[in-house]
Amino acid sequence: MANNRPQNFRPLNCDDMERSIQLCNGIEYLIDEFQRETNGKEPNQLYKIEYKQQLLKIANHLEELIHRLIYLVNKNNKEFYFRHLYAIIKSISCAPNVFIITAFYLDPEREFKRLVNRNTFNFEVEQILKKIQFIKPVLQSLAVGRKSGIKSILHSI
View 1: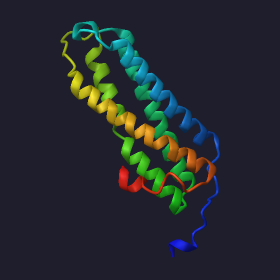
View 2: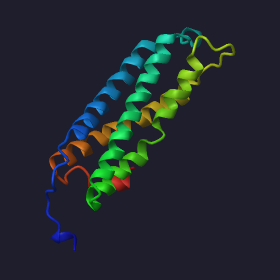
View 3: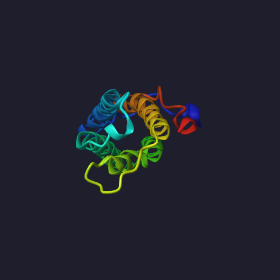
View 4: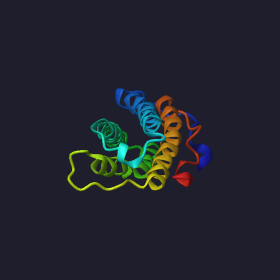
């Protein structure tokens, strides 16, 4: 039965798909920018409103990406698209939490400060970056209706 499926599918070429790809690029950029700015800083130097705002901006971009992908899943309920978009949503659904929680701890106005475990934070961020770097080509393939680049999505995520 798998041989009867066409190799190309109707593209999901719409504003939401294009914006989703832009968000992936933006998330990568914002994470890189945050990491460059905080690299080499002592833990007590991280309690700045700017860092909190950067983290919340990343979380906001992730939330928008999830929202747009959920819309695309609901709009394109064909099995092929649903399966792949749903797998992407499932893989990043908790990603904003890392940034929201860290922003909470880095808020300079909090009375009781808590040091952020950089190793744990960096590990979580690297996992999110890997997911975004994997998701982006899948979204690009879906945007043009190609099956290439998405075969292993269900096994990788």
